[in-house]
Length: 81
Image (cartoon, rainbow, N blue to C red):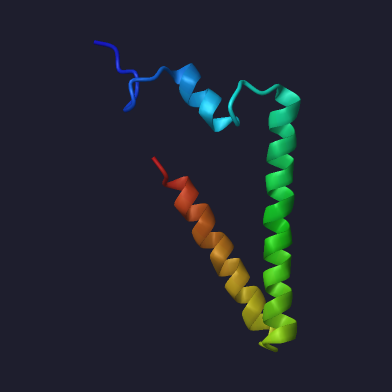
């Protein structure tokens, strides 16, 4: 018996749903990846600015917290099944 997913759909149908309704071209998917990476860094830098400027926390503590968050993120993705 072939496993076809929890909804009874094939892998192509699962990928179609993840890419926004249709099979996207490589350029479109690369654009989404780059846009997501840029948005991630805007949120990180914006959060760091809020911590340093608005809340006036010590810079060394803020950077240490940022480094700790990155380390936990890397460890979490390393051990992800």
